[in-house]
Length: 296
Image (cartoon, rainbow, N blue to C red; front, side, top):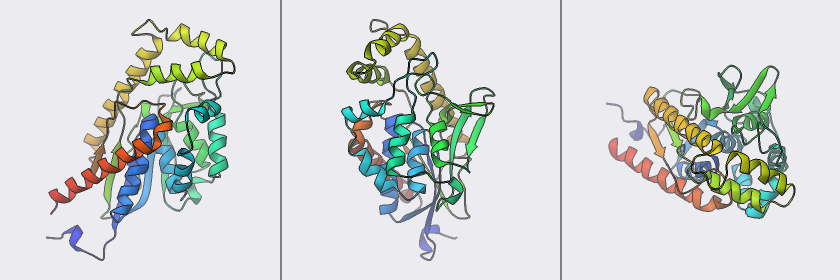
């Protein structure tokens, strides 16, 4: 019987899939580090939301540059990068963060990347999945991370694009495969219990336009309400995304699954990169060991 691991001429090829998850998706960085440290070669990547962002940086060959930049992100820099907007459909424009990343990692067309890559978004008009496999890398990332009510949706012709996690939070069926490779998934989707608290903290510490933003925020998510508009919508989306991810794994089971609920971190904990990345690396190491033990 053929043993994949006994054939030393074979490279350990991996098709990598990275989930949505906000700042918890920084665990994807540690996961990629561990896969490479173990000798796995990632030949393609697909991601949704934060998975699309980290996956895009890796596919561009610039993950280390992105990592070094993220290590400089503290609460002050988060405030500087959040361009609040008084609007009925979003709190943040999202332009400032994309421009800051472009200053670190220049834009490139997806078809020119060293390895195959795709990002997932959702068309809010038709409710259909939108797969970006060509065109501007940052346009794909910006559409994929457009968390409803938080980021300004991306308008593209007749389409209004929002977070891909609504339709395909773990795009196992979209990553490019080659014969004999391993399908590896890192899943950090799950309930965001602390997101409302963190969002309030960020806005209250923001100086410019603080009174206007707080006034709007107090209307949709008052301090004294356990279940307000924002909380109910956020938790509903979290439940849906988690269920969709579980269903995706049933339909297309990964060979190696790195499942990281991480309820202690919120969508907005971007200043905790080193801790979250370390969790991703440790969990990936454990998942690889489990896989190897089952196939020894």
